[in-house]
Length: 596
Image (cartoon, rainbow, N blue to C red):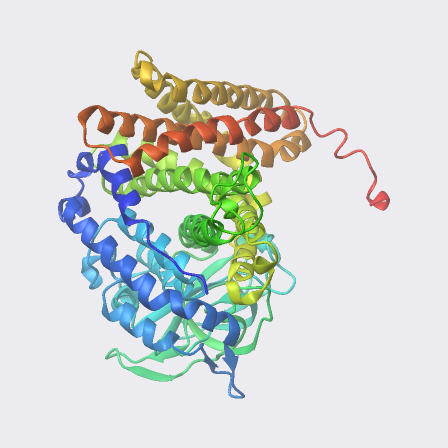
């Protein structure tokens, strides 16, 4: 059976030593969250993930969710009790708005804690995770009546939330959606249509589910310019806040799928369901993007989380599994064979996973802190810079973390050999669960197109220019640090390759849009590798400082080896991405469709 240990110490090292948590103390949420409180929250949340959620992960995978004849759905054994404990423990409300009963702690803290809950049990973590996104959209665009009626119970976790975009004929191209909304005399709307792939769409964890649904008001313009967003509760809410009668929305079926069996992925049928407009008519996609952007950050965390839990179990196996002898002679001659951790190729796989995990956790922390800066920094320029960084990096970490997270789950499975293919060891579940992360909340190819087509040219390229400046400033400020030079030069090289790629896109992407499309995934991976190298440089600086102060440890100094491994064995992929993307689209687009 797999196990999991929350990496609280590593998270705290990043906050305190790498990103100087104290410099955020002028932000309101951080003034109420000193480092000792942050550590206490992460420790308690990590223990909940380890002791309560992780044991239910295999249960959820084996049992799945069940739809009854009346359309109601039951979750796997133990999920309901765990969710009640999760909500009552205040974990849903951690970063919630105090106006609606939330604790008002940093959004970054909630994001970092989510790594632990997702690693322990992705299917479970999706229920409160989707609720958080729905809260953000409603808080940003809902009117005061909707906020007062729905947000307190959503913030506490008593009610959950969903997002409803996809239809059978309509995935990425939302301009094709057909769900109809007919305005009623009381100002509400009657919603009719079918939505598919709705995560947490129906379940028994909470007494109400608040669906945010994209639809088209009668007479609205065609395409995405005619889409509106509606709040449609599973159960109607009376004026006094009590639960009323069942609304006209029902689960038609539960999708049979490859992984995340413990989460109810539903087909939802809307039959004149009562709903209310959120935001302006025909501006629904704009409102839904608040939820989608938050969800994309959440999915990035999923990629990291599954990579880390897979690594932990593969590393434990490699230290115990006896097979063959070391190429340099027996390491444990008293045993019939050496543990497989002695073999270079096993170490290669484990180090590739771990070098990603620790660099990605740093990059996640950097981006997560930007959320709070963008919302609450007192200086307008600081808010704008944080928003630019957040906007640029969201598609990057969503796509890269999940691409590599899935690949790492497969590597970890490979470490276990045949046992990795057998269900009882748990590794094959991590592989199956990780696969969806590359697809939902915008497939990774779409994230790459969003990056090169929207995020790079936005505001005259201000965000990517700021990223270049961030890295340049760090390199310049530390250029005379002899101990740090071995870690800085690889970052400098990668940054130069990224600049070349950016110039190539500027010169060739406008001339032929297919060039931008053909280059998009390689460009995204190149940007991600550069950002990870930047993070490893910052980690190395923090470790070297601790070492000079005499406050380091063997565990911390391990990171210096990991930083070198990343630079020597992973970062060279950046040059390959540059070479591929500058080859252009000609060969890629040469064959007629009939030739495929």
